[in-house]
Amino acid sequence: MKEDFDQFLPLSAAELHILLALAGEDRHGYGIMREVARQSDGRYKLGPGTLYDNLQKLLDQGIVQERSPRSPNDDPRRRYYRLSRFGRELLATEIARLEGVVSEARQHLKIHPERA
Image 1 (cartoon, rainbow, N blue to C red):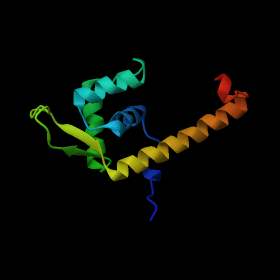
Image 2 (cartoon, one colour):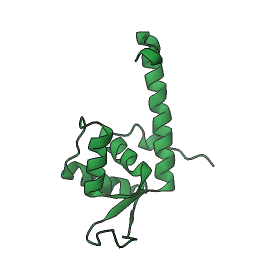
Image 3 (tube, one colour):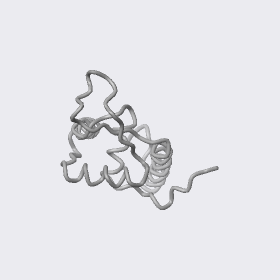
Image 4 (cartoon, rainbow, N blue to C red):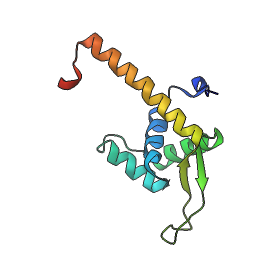
């Protein structure tokens, strides 16, 4: 059965960046903030308030899950987060939606992908 993601889309910028940061691996809060800055070449920075408010919302919605430290290298004082199966599907759906938006914009602006 196909999930209905309409109530969750579009994702806010903070939500999108958090989910992208968690797409590759589980991370703790500071790790998410660093990965968001890295992925955006420093153009988008999450402050702790924005990060943790959004993480709580994503946890409540079942998009993100908290996990326990699993290796000796994990700091037991930190909370680690991962995308749920639902969160991965939601992120994939949002990426497809954004690709459609970009494609439409390129057509209207007459921008060719190879020149963008």
